[in-house]
Each structure stands twice: as C-alpha cells, then as structure tokens.
Length: 529
Image 1 (cartoon, rainbow, N blue to C red):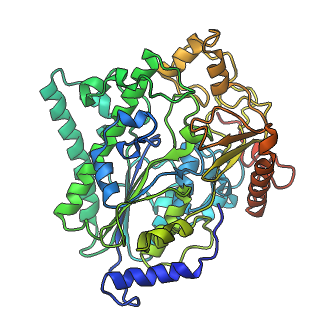
Image 2: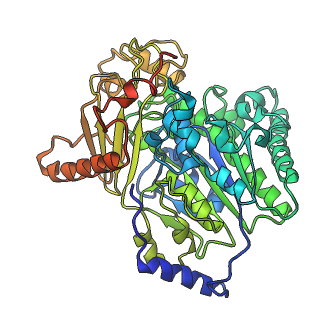
Image 3: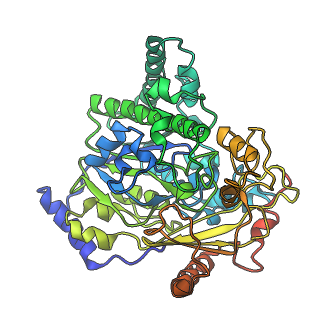
C-alpha cells in the first residue's frame, strides 16, 4: 500500500461535505471521541457480509449490532490486517505502520536480542500517545499484547469490573438452564459496561476520549458445542457453505459454529458500548470503529496465513456527526494501518510522518458516491514473520509478503524450504503447537492426514509452499488455484511482484534489504521459544 498525493477532488469533497452540513468549510467541528472495538481472531464474519450469489459461512452468523452500524456508517468489504498474527497486527494498527517496520512489534511475543534502546518500536508514537499529548483521555480495556508505551502506560488500563467476558462461552456454559445461561450473559455484559463507565468517569468533564476495547473473544479456547445452546446456531446449517479448503464434515462444522457463537458474543458486547454512549449523549460525535486482528484460529489457512481467510477482517466506521453520506459499502482494498492516520486527521491533527497508512477521512467526508472509488487504495500489503513455531529445531520464522488488488493476490514465500505451519506429520493432540492452533479441527486434520480423500487439503493447509502464489480473487474466492505458472498470467505476476518488491525495498523491510536474512538473526531472532 502506498500513500499517494490527494487529487483535487479530495479537497472538493471536503468542501462539499462542509457545505452539505450547513457549515463554512473553515469552521471546525468539536473534536470527536474515538472508540475502537477490536476483537481477537475475528475474521470477516458478520451477517452484513452475506453474498446474494454465493453461499458462505456468513449466512449462518447473526450480528445485529454490527449490521445496524453498517447501515448507518461505512462498511469496508475488503479490509485486511498488516500481519495475520496478534502482536504484529495490533502494533501496526496502533502505529499506522507496516508490521515489518516495527522492530520487536513485528513478531509475536516480541523477540528482540539487542539493546531495547535500539528497538524501533520504542521510538514510535501510537495514535493513543499522540491523542494523549493533544489533550485526549485515553485508555484500554482487556487485551493489549503490544509494547506498553503504545498505550501511554499501564495506569491507563480499565479492567476493575473484571475480565470474565474473555471466557464468554465457558462462563455461560456454567448455567444449567436457559434462564441461568441468560443471567450469566447479562452479568458478563454488565462487566463490559462497568469497565467502560470506569474509563469514561476517569476523564475530565467535556474532555474528548479515545478508548481501545479488546476482549479475547473469539480467540481459542471456547466451550465446545456451545453454538446451539447459547446462540441458536445449528452446525448442520453450515453444510454446503464451508470454504473449499475446509472439509465439510460434522466435527469441523461444529467447531466453526462454536467460533461463530464467540463472534456473536463480541457483537453483543459492542451493543452495550453503543447503549452506554447513547445514554450519555456521546453517540453522535463518537467515531466507533469495529474490526478484528486477523482470521480465524485453529482452522486451515486462517490465522498466520496470507490468503483471505487469514488476513481479511470485518471493518465498519460509524460516526453520525462526521460521515457525509452513511450507508455506503467500500469495495476498494483497505488496510488497518489506515486507521491511525484516519483518527488523527479526523480530530484535526497532522498525520505523523512515521505512518505508512493512508487516511480514510476523505472517504468519510465525501458526499459524492462516485468520488469514493477514486479516494480508495488500489492495493494493500500484508505479510508475516515469526508467530509461534514451537517444535521447530531451527525456531526460524516463515517469511512471506503479499500484495493484493481488487482482482489479484500475489504471495511471495521467501523461504519455501521451511514449514509454513508445523512440520508434518501433524500430531493428534490439541495443544497450540506451531502456527495451526490446537482444537477439534486440527485434531481432525491430524487423524485424517493419511486419508487419500483429504490428504490434498492437509497439504494445502500445512505442507510446503512454492516461492510464488498468484490467485484470481474474483474467479477463485477461496484461493484454491495457484496461477503462478499459468502462461496467460505471467504479465500480472511480473507487475505485482515488481510492485511488491519496490515497496518493501523503499520501506526498508529487513527481509529484502542487505542479504535478506535480517529476521533470521539477532536482534529479531532469539532462542526464546
């Protein structure tokens, strides 16, 4: 993704939007509040993403809060994380900077063997620190998993009401009757409300605020077979709707249904936040953003993978006072590194020069639907280095980078001789080994890896990968056919590969500068597992 100069029509759009609200363009609005609801391991699953011409998993999930905000906000149809791994994704969102530029924040659990003073992440500002300096009341509730200074400090955490909501389905399962389960649900939602209230009450009267809400739903583990009892999701309704790389069998359908229930739990939590904002008269001038840090855990080609199932996430921006024409769907590729500059521009601050993201603010403010197409990105970058990789003797990362346009996805695997997930054969235990999270689906894959009927899907999920992968996203929405060797696709392969390598080189990616092995040795690599 590249930050491009804004053409003249962006300025026109901003002027038109101010005129449409009956305000002079030079009259600033009061600074908005910002609430970012960021789910853990939530891929692009919400009922707002149902497709009329193709059966998908989204046909089964029901997310009324997300859907309502989409109808009255801006829904991004093709949003992606910088890296499909927790810490790298979150650090990239906070800094507005591609994951590979964030030092210890570029890999899970922050392996860094050098002097901490030399760690690039210690030198970076986050949108939280910048807003704090600008007079905002800032805070975070539940999971962070990044360098603490990016949230100003640990005294900015607001979890006094508890954190049981992080084990939502397991808590609700303690209820032996439907009534008891409903009571537990309400108690968990009140925990969310009370934590939010404690944050709001800690600010000064009239002070704008920025809150980061990040429970661990729908991260594993969750309560097995909870989908039907807690959310009314029948696993059999997923039959015929699973992606092509996912075996459409009862065990995996049940696992996926339980995951969707966890996503619905997060949606219910956002509903509490919306309600509290409305109660306090803060809803109209609050930028409410909802998304997830990467794709589904413990399923093939999800978390840690660069195909859509791993990097594509839900994204909606809702701001009644600031969106010129609500109810829009943006099809252009969008990166979550675009959020930090968007927040800064929306509150009247300059976009920090460290940021790679491109502000979405002009899209929010432009009343001309046709102009939206020209304001969006033409491509985005994604990638990964080290995630867990437990059990590998070398403990080296699996380095990949990708560039995606509306039509194509090109992935470059820099070390195709390394195992991308976990060395075969897969083990039957359900612990979180390697980059394929443990659970019923992983256990099923291990048990069927020698079955001729499923061996190709096992290889696709965890086997060695070629140096280059190229997929037609329109004709092949599940990315099952690698076109890298197709004669008729050589031109687009060269074009995308050249563009990818130029951006990585221009931005100093340690994977391509020098000998290209910067992530394979200290300070990025340590012996800590």
